[in-house]
Length: 319
Image (cartoon, rainbow, N blue to C red):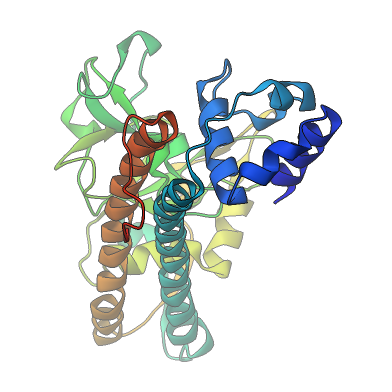
């Protein structure tokens, strides 16, 4: 709402506050100005537009019923996108909570301490050249440092595409666990955090040198178990202690392989996986819906605001 207040102040300062009398909904005004900002030089940077700029914008004002219909369509899309994002956060929290309860809080004294290297193969990614970077559709999806969120989890918008040479050892497939090995500075916000490669980008891709690919060599554990294990506090502390560097912090392969954890019974891991795997699948499905809705919204927004696409008065619109 802070941005809307800034708009109101700008309009009032320029002596055209009466314009608001013809704006049925503040949400219509917000969507309209969002479109103007997207069209402005510099794209989506709200801070680059001052009050004078806002006052100079000519607002297209269809009849109030049409304003209401347009705002309803766009707000419904935004609400659905927000709901799916919040649902994904809940699903992630459910997996973390279940892991902590079963394998940390309820860990048994008889569970053996083992090194993670007994269960996984750690592979460094492709050291690529910038000249090989390509546009979407002209290269292979390349998962990279920006493909992992601070705090863990897959960051879809960080994907790159690469058209240069690579080797078979640089391939990843959906379901593979990747983990970051580099971070500027020593805040430990990103380094050592994992993600699971999604199906969204196809059956295979490659990964860059700033992340490791972790493949299982002992099937007593599973990829979902490994993912949440790497997110757990005890393992995170060990990984943090294994990082080093002056300006750029690095996590070595040995630092991952030497991390220790208590091995629960195989049946417990299988049961955990059977519960969590559908949650991870639901997160992927939700993201696909989010992208579809975002593309629909971004396609409709300029057409509705310009009048190219009209909504009939009184038409009920649902998303």
